[in-house]
Image (cartoon, rainbow, N blue to C red; front, side):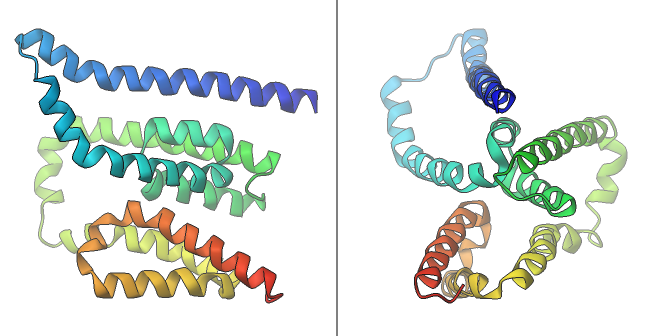
Length: 220
């Protein structure tokens, strides 16, 4: 119990430090450009631009934290939010790893396995991106080939489809509500297909609400 407590304290300490460091690095990029070129934007113009988009990101960020944190654990959450690409890569990798190890999200085993899975995907992604940058000139004709374009468009549906089958089969009653809501939403507003990362937390909240309702009625 003592070791678990110490582990949690260290995870939060290092996690917060790396989150702040990542934020500083991201802010240093535009600041460095402004210093180098000697050009600074007008503060009022920056605030006016942020006013239109920042509130949306604040809401989405808050929803994602409450959605992914119980699933990925403390260490996995910090690591995933620092390295990014949570919806497309980090969350599916963590879920698949816990599923393979038969560990429940939120448990001690799930915490460790989720963190290792997310760390592994981060390292592999970095290596692949590095190799891609070095070999971009040679790979560009292949990647831009019309034959491969349809395949790239189906990567995300194939990824979530494979994971979805496993979890829907476990308890289909919980999957009905978010599935029906998302299908109806995409049929009514097809343009939302480009906002999958925003709608995943929304679907999770719908699933939680439906699960609570079914639980109260004694159906699950």
